[in-house]
Amino acid sequence: MSVQILSGLSLSDLNVRFYEFMKNENNAVDAASFIFDSLLEDVTTGFLFEAHHGLKTGLTELIEGEKEDEEPYNIVNSPECDVFGFSMLKKTPFDSNCSCPNCDRPVSATRFAPHLEKCMGMGRNSSRIASRRIASNSREPTSYAGLLSDDEDDADWAGASQPAERRKRRMKNNNSKKPKQMHNGNNKSNNGTNADANDGGATYETMTANEKKNLLLAICGVVSEHTKKLCTRSTRCPQHTEEQRRALRNSVLEPSTPESQTMGLTAEEAGSPPDSSPSSSCSSSSRKRERHRAPRKNKAKKDRNASPNGRD
Amino acid sequence: MTVNNTIAHQRLILTGDRERFKELLRRRLIECGWRDQVRMLCRDAVKETEGNNVTLDTLVTRVTPRARALVPDTVKKELLQKIKTHLLTQKEH
Image (tube, rainbow over all chains, first blue to last red; front, top):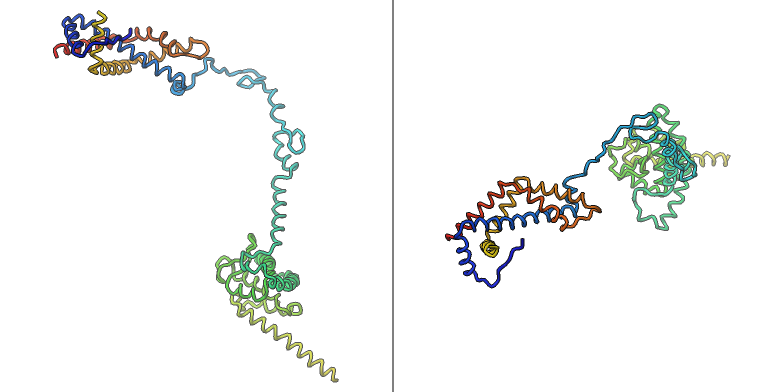
């Protein structure tokens, strides 16, 4: 039913013929059905285009969703199979054996993780060992929280630090015995401060006595157990106790005095009284001055004592 | 008479009223659910063809006759009536 286009017919001609044709009402009915057929064809084709487009691009499937399976699932009820009809015997040997990538042995799936832990050295215990190793390595380098890092490369600095280090080590040996003897009453706090003092020795190692003094005048300076860094807050920082600061200053400042080796006992005595405020380094420096004088007096006395003896 | 019918049709196109009627028919067919029926017919046609390769031509040749038969009488009558009155009122100008 193709729609003919009459060519060569002007609009006025078309109108005239149309009006003539419409004079008969039957003709109108006829034309109406003709037009309706043409319209219906158009509309049908339009819908078919739509449907075809949907089918080809997958739109129809998306809109309608997945088609249900024709066969319903039956629950299998037999002793050798599970509900889906798979045999149970087949399953276990297939799934449960995996081969270890390290040693190529077949391992039961339930034991695979523990096996890997042992075989490859991964897991809790070995990670603990590894972390311990890392910790012991990281203690070696002398980094003290980036403080005074400009001077690290100085030749003078290195030269000055070496004897201090030596002294430090000697003193460490002394110190390690000292606190335990001093406070036997409170073991808990003792252990904490003890560890701090030792760590402090590690980070303070490369500093000279003056440097340490100046530094401890300005900051709290207690060495944290975790980061191995100095606390850079003020001397009244709330995170660390007075006791910790005192212990640190005792262990760090005293050994640097040149007479420390001979003055082991007197240093302990000087550190023990609680009324000597540790936060102010004036007192500690004054203590040192006293110590400086004290041996001279002793020496002088000895000299005096010796001289009369010599004279005698 | 086909020439005269064509003249009437052509005049309808020229005045732009054909589009109006087409839109009306389309709406009516959607309203009465004819479009969904045609869709079902299309689905059946797709299932019948082997190889999942349906061309538009096969769809048209298979579905169109059945779709025509499915058009509700009420819709057809309404449209015919409206077109006829339209044509007759045109005559009087």
